[in-house]
Image (cartoon, rainbow, N blue to C red; front, top):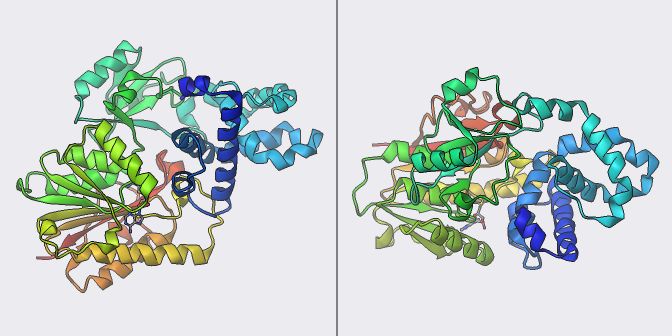
Length: 429
Ligand SMILES: C[S@@+](CC[C@H](N)C(=O)[O-])C[C@H]1O[C@@H](n2cnc3c(N)ncnc32)[C@H](O)[C@@H]1O
């Protein structure tokens, strides 16, 4: 991203910042999620950069707001209150030691910098980032086994000055500082590496550009991983899988890598997101994926081409409350999302030979998670059961739900990866 920025004129960069400001404000007030607001709007320029910067600002908005408030800036310059959203972006940029280029904010730059450096949590995070869950979600990269091997990736990181550590060694280690660069194996997913410090710049790395590695949040890797664990070695050559709601396609390309010998139908109904999906599949070498610009709900499960569909990954549109989209989501919006999620889930049950279905959201709301699971189970009329999903993951669904213990929840504060929910359904014999 920094190189991309350098190529942009200050005017273009300003436009991107304004877009991020508007989109993040809308997300935080519960008016939509960042993916839809970025990719479904044809007037947005530099969609990838806008999305990436927006995600980061949302992730850290709590601590950024604390820094802004503790700077006393709004007291000395109350007129800046109307630019709160833009200030968040500038603080984020300053935190990562990039240069905020907004000349009209230059006058407050020094005050802001001082406040940031004096802010207790930030100064602590300078020496011990992993101690600060509020600001420091772990940054993960997934090894794209369609293009390379784990050994190659580790070697290339070592050439870039990173040390490799096993998970067990990392637990014991006292040496995590921003001055030391590490890649650490993940304790659950073999294709995943955690990157320290989390502010490492990925966008310039050749391995990212060549799609040998893909920035992929840990929790978002769970659905493909769980489907593979269930069906690995059990599928014949003619068996296939469906990704019902695919774009931008991070999970799709992981599924494609795990089931490289099987065909995957990847549905996406939105035209511009479909382009992103198709492009990413091409660049990531996912030749076994057939991208379909179609509404999954309009597919005919009795179509002969779906006869051998054995698994479906369903990751529908959701409120995005797990990736920092505020706690102020309106109940009626949640219920509208719930209805669509349930419709999609019950459509999955109609595929005649499907054995295993993952249902996931990046939401932390019960309405979109345990409730959809409960209602889906009932709608399956006894044909499916809720699988005891990812048993070794310690954090389960809500205790108040009868199926809660079978579900997986991920909490950013506790697990240091984005908020997420996943549950799997297995056909009963
Ligand atoms: C949460 S995003 C999926 C993210 C994706 N699984 C990933 O990991 O990159 C949901 C996507 O599903 C698409 N979608 C929603 N309803 C759909 C439907 N009925 N048929 C096909 N695509 C749909 C949305 O346009 C959106 O791109």
